[in-house]
Amino acid sequence: MAEFPVRKIQVITEEIFHEGGPAPEEPRLRAAAMALVKNPFAGRYVERLQSAMEDLKPLGLLLSDKLIDALGGVPSRIDGYGKGAIAGTAGELEHCALWHVPGGYAMRDRLGGAKAIVPSATKVGAFGSRLDVPLGHTNAAYVRSHFDAMEVGIADGPRPDEILFILAMSIGPRVHNRMGGLAADEIKAWDGLR
Image 1 (tube, rainbow, N blue to C red):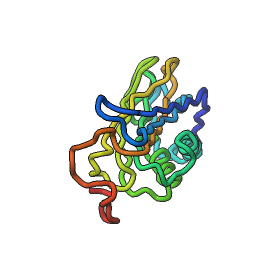
Image 2 (cartoon, helix red, strand yellow):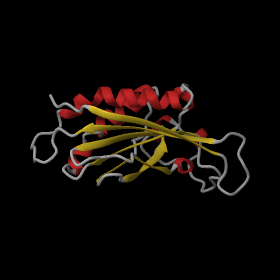
Image 3 (cartoon, rainbow, N blue to C red):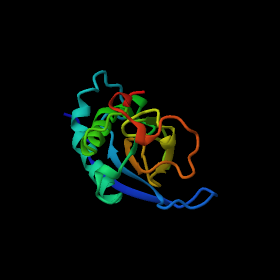
Image 4 (spheres, helix red, strand yellow):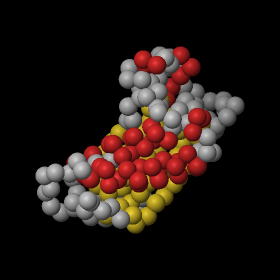
């Protein structure tokens, strides 16, 4: 069993009122929850990592709950999500990949079984690194109005032996979206992965 002690959790929210055009009836909301944790694999090559995903499932659920609370506590209003991770310089990209299952499935679970793949970005980075976490619609990957990214990071991490695990959620399309394609109110059950 791998241990990922948490040094810090940070939740940030944004209200987007306009992007240079007219203000929408309601602002777009975005939020990210981040956990800075000790990387138990830092500084060495470990062949078998996959079982450590199980150890991160409680953290995925915790960050998902914090995000839902930050966005008003109504999961059914949330229609965008994404995830990411930054490994410190003594880590590797595969350490970030540990977040795919515990981060993605936690959000799907808490949002009532969202169907679309959870967009993801990862990198190895130095102290203070930032990451553009991609966002997409929760129930259909090709809803263009919800293609977005949220730049996030924590000023005092990741240290070389840490990983910053990130979840992000949003409510509503991009302000002033007008690129067409599949509309959110036209999604059918088979649209989840297209």
